[in-house]
Amino acid sequence: MDLWAPEREQWNSGFAVLCGVDEAGAGPLAGPVYAAAVILPRELEIPGLNDSKKLTEKKRETLYGLITAQAEAWCVAFATAEEIDEMDILNARMLAMVRAIDGLSLKPDLCLIDGSRDHGSRISITAPHVTIVGGDGKSASIAAASILAKVSRDRYVSTELEALYPQYRFARHKGYGTRLHYEMLDQYGPCPAHRRSFLKKWEARRP
Image (cartoon, rainbow, N blue to C red):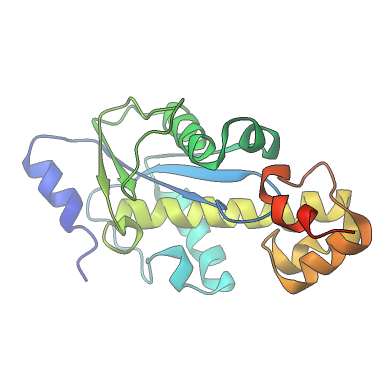
């Protein structure tokens, strides 16, 4: 697949500086939701670039280094577990993406946003943008953003949260609702890193 096709279409429409935006960690029971915004040099060759979900952890780590070294601008941002509980996951995803776009050192003419949503009930992406369903597998810029968001979140959960709350084994499950994670919840109850709004079913079945 030609991952530069969406960018080429926008360049031909007059948008010179394009930014890919994606988020990672919408589904886990704990930790922040991360987002990244990336502006790549035109037609940059990055061997193996693809949707982060289709890559091994080792390959994502390698690509993270290549992308951050060669991007014209990039920014990773997040919304906390507390913000997710306070405003819901859709609004928190939008907030993380807005923060990533706002944190770029170079202002994009147009943002390519992965997915079909550009707003929640409270937070909207206001920078000029288009949404692309499945964009992390169609656009080089969005694929790069998906990798930066995923690697940044996994690193945070595996190091920071693992060190703060070692009993939950965050490095093993990255905060997702695995059997091990639920076993640790049954044993220890939730910690401050948990998204309480994601634990309602678990709390309902507790004795």
